Every structure is written in structure tokens, then in C-alpha cells.
Length: 122
Image (cartoon, rainbow, N blue to C red; front, top):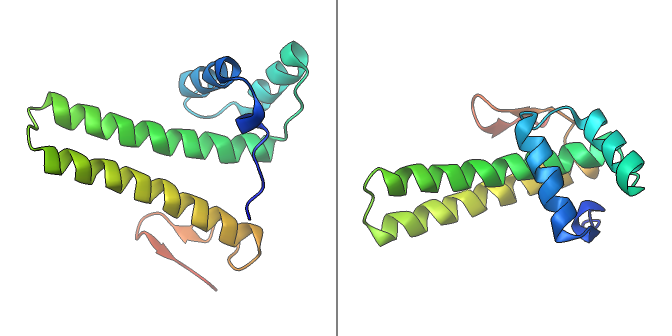
């Protein structure tokens, strides 16, 4: 079973602050966000943990943006909206599976080829 993220244990308000800082930094500047958490809230979190959270947040935000753009563009078909939501959920799940495979050493860190959306197991 995957480990529980330290960030998931934080208050909703603090998670919203973290999310806002991540968005404002383009989902980067992880060291500064970790330092802010430590200095301001006494929460110690590794850059790696923040990086995993940042990737998940970015994926979720992109899925939400995709749905919003399509809805604003006149997408009235409820089935298409449902499919977009399902696609976003699948992409989040895919990201988590790849991270887990990296954690258990089945694939090397960074082996995922983002251009072809395929996995290199060599």
C-alpha cells in the first residue's frame, strides 16, 4: 500500500496555501516552499515528497483546466464532459502507478518517455 503523504495530513487551509504557491511558481521552487512550511508552520517535508505532490497537483489542475476550457467553448454534450473527467482521473492514476513502479525499483527514475507516452524498462 502506498505511503500516506505528509501533505495529505495537513489542514485544508494549509494545503490550499501550498497549492497556490505551487501554481504561482509554475509547480517549481520546491525548496523555497519546503523552507516556508518549515519556518512558518513547523512542518518538515523533503523536496522529493513536495515534488511528488507538485506533480499530482499539476496533473489535477491540468485536467480541471481542460474541462473548463471545453465547457466554456460551448461543449454541451454531458457525455463528453464525463469522458473528459474520466480521462483526467486516468491520467492521475497513471502518474501514481509510474511513481510507484519507480519507488519499488521496477523502472528507473525518469525512464518514462513523455514524447511517446511509453515506458522504457531498460
